[in-house]
Amino acid sequence: MDVSAVVMMLVAILVIWGGLALAIVNLVRRSPENRGE
Image (tube, rainbow, N blue to C red; front, top):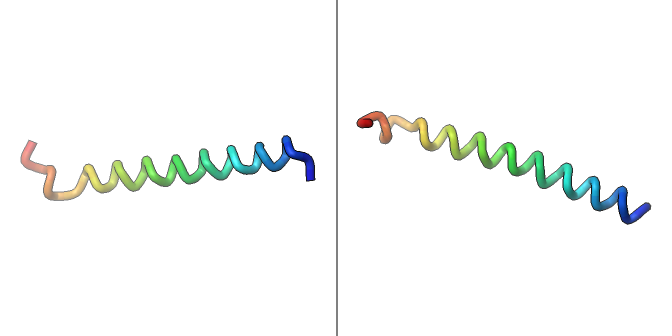
């Protein structure tokens, strides 16, 4: 495979995992423990 194609695949995977991580962090921040604000 082309090196550029592999790099693009890795970047896409990183972006997807980054989005999942942000979603998980947002869910954790919305947990009942932080409702005292």
